[in-house]
Image 1 (cartoon, rainbow, N blue to C red):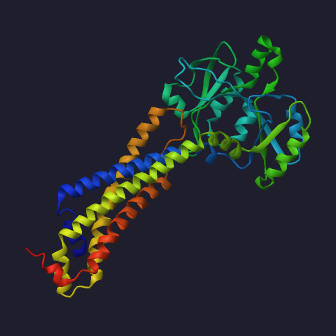
Image 2 (image 1 turned 135 degrees about the horizontal axis):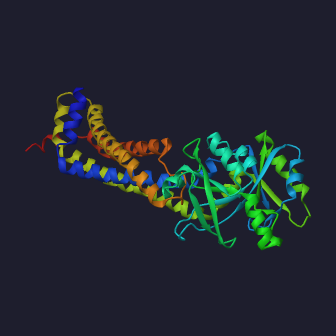
Image 3 (image 1 turned 60 degrees about the vertical axis):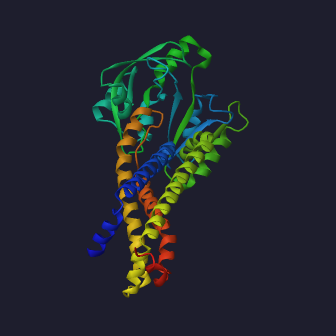
Amino acid sequence: MFIFKLLLKNAFRHKLRTLLTMVGLVVAICAFGLLRTIISAWYAGVEGSSSTRLVTRSAISLTFPLPMNYAQRLKGVDGVSSISWSNWFGGVYLTERNFFPQFAVEPASYLALYPEYRLSDAERLAFLRDRQGAIVGRKLADKYGWKVGDQIPIRGTIYPGTWTFTLRGIWDGAEAKTDESQLLFHWAFLNESIRKLAPKRADAVGVYIIGIKDPQNAALISQRVDAGFKNSLAETLTETESAFQLSFVSMSEAILLAIEAVSYIIVVIIMAVMANTMTMTARERLAEYATLKALGFAPSFVVKLLFGESLLIALLGGLAGLLLTLPLAAGFGKAIGTLLPAFHVSGLTMSLQMLAALVVGAVAAAWPAWKMSRIDIVQGLRHVA
C-alpha cells in the first residue's frame, strides 16, 4: 500500500504533464480499439460461417446463375445431407442510401441450414405460409423501425419493378457475430414473377448452400460436386462457406492491411510521447534517486519506482481509453448501419488495448530506469539545489 501511494503521488507530482500524457494515451488506445474493431467487423462474415456448410456457385463468376435442376443431382452426391439455394436481389429501399443485403431463398431448407437465425415458431410458420412474406434481422428492423406485419417496398435493380413484402418475422442472432442486417424472402415468389416477365431468366439460382455432416470431408465433397458438373454448360465451383466469404474480404485486403498498420503506428507514436515524459521525470528527480542510493536503497528499488509510475499512468490511460471505446464503437456502428453488420468491440480487442497500454508503459520506462539505476551518487547529489 505504501508503494502504491508513493507511485500515485509521484505520477501526479506534475499534474498537467501527467494529464496531457494520459489524454494522449486515451486517444491512442481508443483509436487502436476502433481500428481493430473495424478489421474484426470486416471479417465477421468469415468468423460467423459454419464448417458444416458449403457454397456452390458458377465456376465462371458469381454473376452467372446455375440451373434449378442441379438441386436433385446435388442431393445425390455422397456426403451431402441437405441443400438449399438463394439469389441476390439487390433492390433499393426508398433511396439508394438504404443499402442492405436481400436474398430470395427456399425458406424451409434455408432456415434449417442457418439455425443461428433465431425466430419464434409462430413467426417461422407465418413466413413459410406467406409466399409474399419476408423476414429480417433484428439490427435491420431496429434501423428502419420495422415491426411484424409492416409492408416493405423494395425497388428492384436486377429485377425491375417495385416488390412489396409483408414482414412476417424478425430474427435474433445466436451470437454477436451473427449477421442481423439481411432481408430474406421466398425464391418461389421471385421465380414466378420472372417466369412471366422474362422466361429465359427463370428457374435459375445464384448459389446452392450445401449442408454436410462431417466438416473434415468438406474438400472431398466439394471435389465430388464439381466433378459431377465438369464439362457441362454450367460448371461449378464449390468451397467452404468461410472460403466463400473470404473471397469478398480479399477484394479489400490492401485497405485492411493499411488500417492494421495505422493502428500499430498510433501505439508507437504514443510510446515515444510516453518515453519522453518518463525521461523528463527521471532527469528532474536525479538528486532524489541519488539520495535513495546513498541511504542504502538498491538500484532495483529505483527501477521499480520508475517502472511502477510509468505502468500506473499507462494502466489508467489505457483503462479510460478502453471504456471510451465502447460508446464510440456503438455510435460508429449505428452510423454506418448495415455496411459492417456485426460491429462490436470483442473481448480480444479489449485485451489487445490493455496489452498495448502496458507495453507502452513498460517500454517508456526502460531507458530512464536503466540510466537511473547506474547513476553515480556523487554526481547525482550535485543536483541538490
